[in-house]
Structures are given as C-alpha cells and as structure tokens.
Length: 181
Image (tube, rainbow, N blue to C red; front, side, top):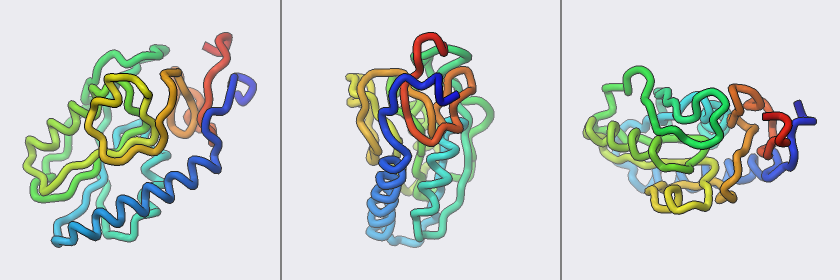
C-alpha cells in the first residue's frame, strides 16, 4: 500500500504537531466562552474519524461526541459530488456549543450543509474545524474557524482520507500514483 503513494505532502509528525496546536487554539476559545453550555464535537464520518480521535484528546474540557455521516466522494470519485447527509443529524444540539469536524474542505458543500442543519437546531454557537483546506475559491470562501493545513488542489489520501475506502489507515497524507487509481 505504501508503494501506491506518489509523494508525502504532510508527514505524521507534522500532523501530530498541528493537531496539538489546533487543540490548544480550540481549548482557549472554549475557555473564553466559559458559559457552562455543553460542548458537542460533531465529526463527519468516515473521513474525520482519525482526526477527531486525535483532536479530542487535546481538549481538556468536558465534551460529548455525536457523529454525522455524509457522502461526498462516492466510490472512486476524486472530486466532490455534493453533500448527502446519511441518517439523521443529532436533534439535541439546542443551546450547546457545536464544533463540526471534517477531514478536508474543498467544494465547501459538506461544511455549509452541516452548518445550516446544525444552526436550525438553535445551538449556542457553531464552529467548524478541518484538517485540510484546498487552496481553491470554493474552499477558501467557505467559513471555517479552524484549519490545520492549506494544501494545493490535489487528491490526497491517508490519515482518514480515502480512495474507494482504501488508504485511510496511512499515517501520513500523500498523493496516489496514477496507476493506483
């Protein structure tokens, strides 16, 4: 599987350091809001599973985790086909601080759709955190309070990101060799 990787864009060490930094930034913001409201982490599955597991361990606050599943890259697609929310979004978000967590921001459709659905549930606050944001207009213009890395407009795998549900388990983030697709 490692032989399918063309180039490593972000190493596991860089990821670990940036996740620690994001954790400190988010924790500081949550402390500043210290109003007693419950904090809910809302990772978008399946891609954000590794990221949220590492990020939540950096937060000293008492948090709950709820999940939402969205399909935006069906099968072997390498560009987003829109955001389809699969299953129900948690209902009990009213009055809570909600942090939406995703692996990658590219078209912006997923974050915008989830944010709108969460805002309709009357949370105390809603913010978004992504590990990666592509340097393209649709991503850069989508509101997102916390960004791990800005990356070029390339299809990447590893650390939760997949191609046809493979490569999520790679510890680094990289690009695939053309023959691996």
